[in-house]
Image (cartoon, rainbow, N blue to C red; front, side, top):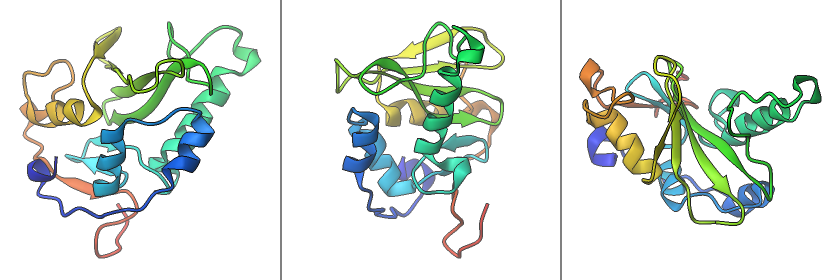
Length: 177
């Protein structure tokens, strides 16, 4: 991803133990590496990568807390925005969002507290119904979305958007997105 984007690693320090403590499960190692290099922000002006402490728009935990609150709200009965799945609750099994696109594609991990270390990517596209499962790492999925035009329905390389990255908290000169 560094080579693809020409990005200089940021070396962000994160208290992963606190984050994983709240979730009750470890996060994928490659996601943590991606975040420490890039932070939260936008790839190719269209793919939103959630991080930590990047403001509400790019905050991984804030997104998860909101998703969980809505998913567990009793006024929605048994309906779930991620049907047939549920949003992950500590100790259980469900989805945790880590990315999305401006076209309303959504990227999640399917996390099972009883199977730590397994993080299949589940994705759905606004244009193509249903869920797609990918048994690959977060970084491989992200790379394929950005660089592989044949990675359908999620590949965006066909649109010639470039492979840039803009941090959510601002560019290196401190200017916000």
